[in-house]
Length: 263
Ligand SMILES: Nc1ncnc2c1ncn2[C@@H]1O[C@H](COP(=O)(O)OP(=O)(O)OP(=O)(O)O)[C@@H](O)[C@H]1O
Image 1 (cartoon, rainbow, N blue to C red):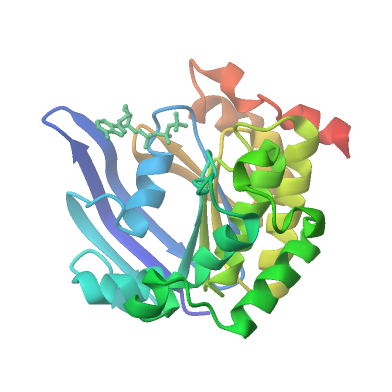
Image 2 (image 1 turned 90 degrees about the vertical axis):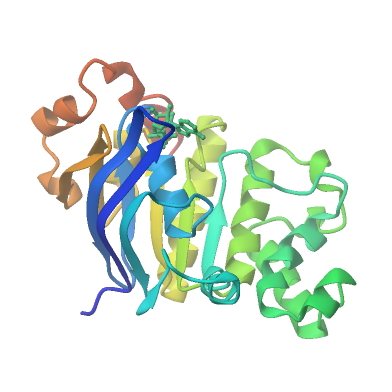
């Protein structure tokens, strides 16, 4: 199957001395649910942020559905980003707006600037947003302000907003890092089930190896800005895990084991 995302020789240097990504090669195929694991500072966030150009790479190429992201102009970038949903560790919701309005923000990339500025969403978009919120168990929160929700609820709103885009790919940057084990499980279950059901590929950054093994169809291990493992969960050995997290072994569990207990 043809890859939907092709990354070659990706490098990112911050300032004069910090090399965050040091030549990443990675291909993502439709329907893959890929966990990107690695210790703090390995380059996981930088990788995801380069893919939708929240950060400009220093070198390399990123092709998404045959469109080059690195050299894309503003208009091309807007079009590319409309097909890539993003989920953030700290949710990035607009606190003073309702849950429904936050989900509808997922539609902005597909709307004219005029309609977007005046929040003129179509009835179909509103119905779809409400249906998504119902599906993720948030039907009682639809008209609440976003800042009235718990962390787990906020992240489910973040997932709904990404799904509202009808994306081809979702990038989730540490979606459960701020959540307790029960909320983490609900969020990961929701993300996984909806991506599978709608045929959306997903790249999800995780510290927790247990969680990666539980959900991912493929695991990519990053260490010091390089891919040091790329294979199935079954192929990820204890020894390789130790290598990826060398010196930072405590980070590979966090609330991962607790998710197992929350099942
Ligand atoms: N805006 C920035 N300016 C300078 N250096 C940065 C910036 N963002 C990240 N870095 C550095 O780049 C390296 C990779 O950081 P990155 O956040 O991508 O790692 P990570 O694997 O996502 O870590 P974490 O799990 O802690 O989020 C680190 O050394 C980090 O300090």
